[in-house]
Image (tube, rainbow, N blue to C red):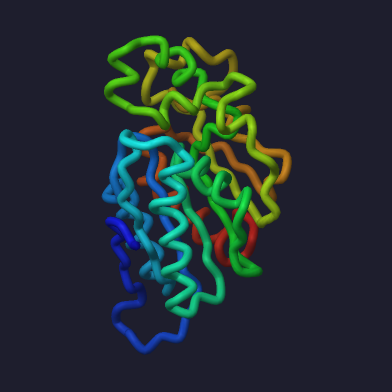
Length: 231
């Protein structure tokens, strides 16, 4: 059953559009689907059809979030006749799609763009999970996002899709930056965002919290969905 999924029919000036390219949007930990609305508006202008998921990121573990929200969203797109199902994620949303693709597939030609993903875990999450207030506020999924060898991000296999990753080098959360030895966005280091199988990778002058609202970042998302590479 579909849960809290806001479908925005894009290209609204022409509802007869035969575009079968769907885009699923996955927000980050502690956020809501509203954080992705600026991307949705840009996708509208580019004539995509978006599924903007509002999932309870602080209430369930990663695997159950995938089961209850990502899987139904993909199934919905397929029922609507999707020829491609692209994914755009922020932060923990990238870990959800990687987890989904361990046992599932997307239509041929589907592409994935991740914004500031903790693909090798977050140093900030590893540090904060020792504190009870952190565990209470951010919930079980946050406890799975550390950078230890047994964390969920570090136990996932490579994914076989065109994958573009954008991450920031501007610390919007300086109180966590000291945990990371190299460039970072305040919560995730540049190195942690990378994956060996990625198709393209860019570092942008953004912080973790607001990267999804950057006009430059949104332009690069559209470029990758169209071309399979950043401009």
